[in-house]
Length: 104
Image 1 (cartoon, one colour):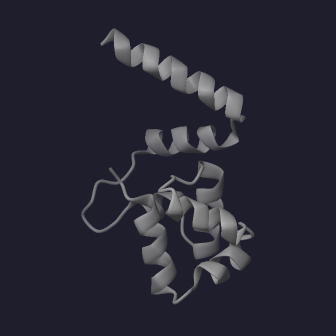
Image 2 (cartoon, rainbow, N blue to C red):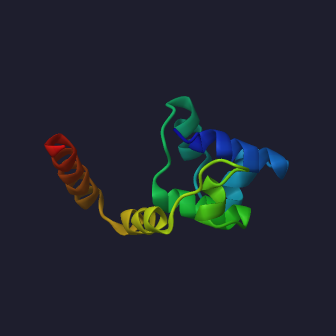
């Protein structure tokens, strides 16, 4: 599984940014970023998009490291669409995916 928090840390430390500076540049509250790390939570896609914009990279660049597998165009499209869904619609999509997986 891709280590999203590790990648954020890598990009932040490459730039010699503190969590505070990342928070200020991205407009994501420092407490939110700290909670991700403390509870080992995956940031939502809309926040990842903000972070990527702050780092000056694309979402595709975020998920590609050296020789590691890159996301396909279809996967990136899914992430983009996921980012614009409301929480209740995201839950519905997850429930549909669970049903589809159970059928296999």
